[in-house]
Length: 344
Image (cartoon, rainbow, N blue to C red; front, side):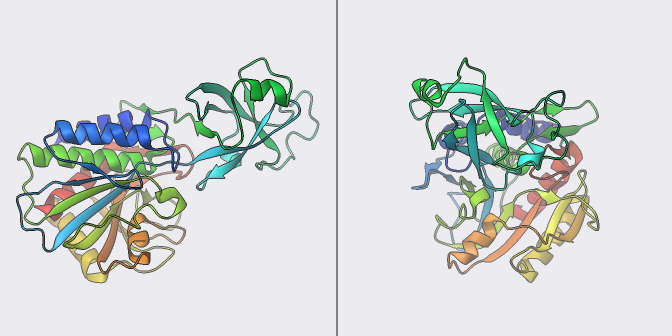
């Protein structure tokens, strides 16, 4: 399955190269739509700008499975421009200021212009600021320094930059010779790439689902409502393919697929979770079962919206989530093995 893993990683890299904080996902959704169309499927855009596709249109649609992954990422939005021409932001999703210090950013204006800058502490030179080390890193103490010759609020506004413009953080994506994948926003573009690789397998006849299978690539997961709409008729099971948590007191790791039994909201469906575990065993996947106490998923949002479905959660292990994240090709492989066994 090495070529399938490579396909999943290549698709993830393509997605990671497209800026897409929650709500600003039109370009990444268009890429996903076009890719699925090229594979011979008939994808559709939802009213919320997500991408929905039926991988098995020739099967009766009762008892269907909906696989969810999200295309949106963390990011920022301009909240004010200072008199010195510096830019303050608010977070979109769970972006944390203290692990974004010194990161390059792109500001995307509503008229299509793109400006670069760096997210820095105010007065960021340790040779000048005696309080540098002790200053809390917050969205009040940090700011975007534009790569433009600006000295005032008026200078910035003259560029066409204004409150409400989207601020995108550089993912700094790299894949090491040893198989590690490092980038911001592997949550959840790595799993989106995995689902696109699964779609290619179905299109080429290498995986033959025995039940109806749909994909929903959502655009508002990081703010809590990506999976709350657009569940097709006939769907009885919803599985979020998101990141698996890696950290203290967890069995998951970057080289495994994680199966979540419970997150911060509620237990996942017991019978469906058991079926996912059995699929991991049947597919020869290296897996872990864990509880994610500080976590919510698109599958949670589906249930909260009132859909009467069973829900589950799986995903490749991701280290340093919501920071500069890391996973491994072996985790991608195990996720694909589980999915192949689960849908086949």
